[in-house]
Length: 322
Image 1 (cartoon, one colour):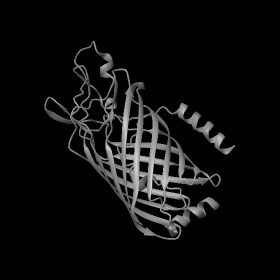
Image 2 (cartoon, helix red, strand yellow):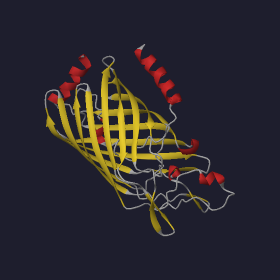
Image 3 (spheres, rainbow, N blue to C red):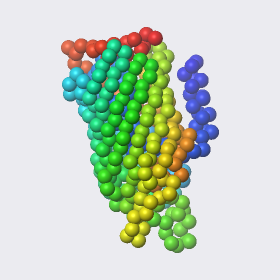
Image 4 (tube, rainbow, N blue to C red):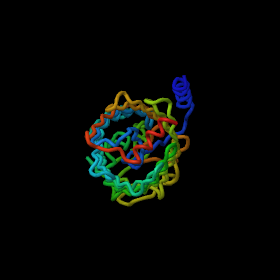
């Protein structure tokens, strides 16, 4: 009953949200920053697939399919790889391509009976230069499968029985090779609807994630929270060979998210997720704007037979009993 009520509430909220800007350039997805482990023991290997649907700029629809693998290198160290494939349907074109590779190293720094602190280092590696075109016309960033830059992400994640907090900083290196600027011709009105992004230099991002966990029963868990993302300086684009700052491109975006996790069995986890912004920056040239996102995924977990359960894993035993 509680779960049905939550789904109805989420549907109403998504219909009422008019803001745009749910932005994730990588920091929100990096390894332990999302704090999604629910097993009673740390898996030696995890394989996962997720599918999300997002409503983006100018009623574009973005489908994102992602594969990930996570391996427990040592008792307190894990390595994760994520690779997406993106398809965008929009007014200007339909595009598709492999997205940026996200590589994350997580190192547990401190562990107590009911909490843990983890250091997360991650790199977002470009798979193309964000230079897709339709004919000879450059396409805006929402149609690009890659941000076109290599980024580094560093963060800390603290987790207790019912609350978790993450803080991450993301720095992009250089600019992409996108060439989209508003055309001079008045005969192309639809091509002037999007934010300009020629040779885009994105500003650094600071992300804060606050998450609450509610256990419904021994197999189902709900997690929801608040996700502000700060663009610390204005983005820049190149016009006439000179870089210009984009007024309104710095500032904050506030996002809300809800996740439902269900253990189908000891080795399989089903996830459902939704998220949307409640406030956004005025100018968003990176193409990451989402009015709302919904998704589902499966995670397959593999354990060593002789693996012992650590005190941190006992945390999740207590969580399910509360």
